[in-house]
Image (cartoon, rainbow, N blue to C red; front, side, top):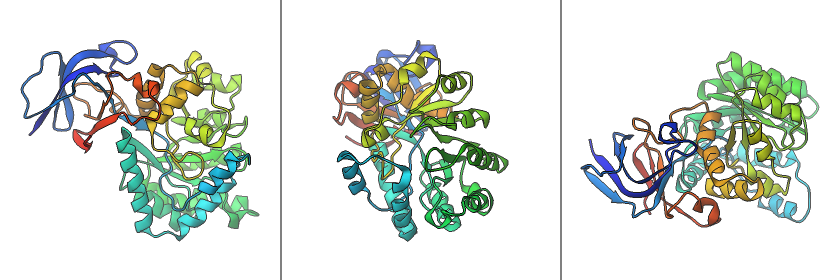
Length: 388
């Protein structure tokens, strides 16, 4: 069993309460990895088989991206250009990706997902969730979750993304399909079930029925909520015990109160607001109420085509008035909580060795130097994913 020593760490973010409040910061320490796990953290460097001198740079836990749509084909750059020219965003563009995804081969879909996962790793994300939702037929959704399961353990069935064109005049028929044959074909490959509860997608009654059907199949609920306008999404999320309500752009005081009194995480996706020129969520309001907040990329071809969590951290700090510490916690522990994981998003002895060496002396540089590639090296379960 080969051991790896990271020495000369100028600043170590552990997110371990035992090491201190907030980020659990340690300075001038070393860290040993053995058998894919953190074996030791301390000031004196012990012997190890392989040694990496960090030269005073910072080490942080790997990011946990709890919301990503990677199973798709096609390109919607023209949609983006149109929005930048002043055309408002609506959910209708999803249909363009649905057509391209249905026409793609399994090999094409998998290759694209693998490419995006490599980008996520290169940007420091060591855990990611992947959704279906661009097939919207039984066979296309089934292959999406099956292929997604080959790139992540966190697979989400999102057959209820929008109502496909062929069911425009039969919404009831599509809900029946999602909660029946489609769910039956997809549940065995997924951990989560999701629904887009918003204008142009599914209403509260439909969303509740879809999530409850998934629960009966053993899937855990999460929900796209309150992205385009105020609505019932957060209330549905809390009522169904959803792990996460995602977007949360338009919230009432009642919504914030529901989130604060529940275990449902508010997952904020600033890449979507950046790409649609929409108002950013009020992160300060949520944090002040005691809501657990996560940050995720929302990587998708239409409204947030980024795999960079550092970019999302910089947006959260600049546009949502989060501190850098709050944003980093949201991108690590927050994302882990949104996936109901306690093993990732932190660096503790005995825990997984998912960590990022920054080309910077402090985590503060993630927002201080926006747009700069500060991810030097990444280890996932002790295996190096990139080598700077």
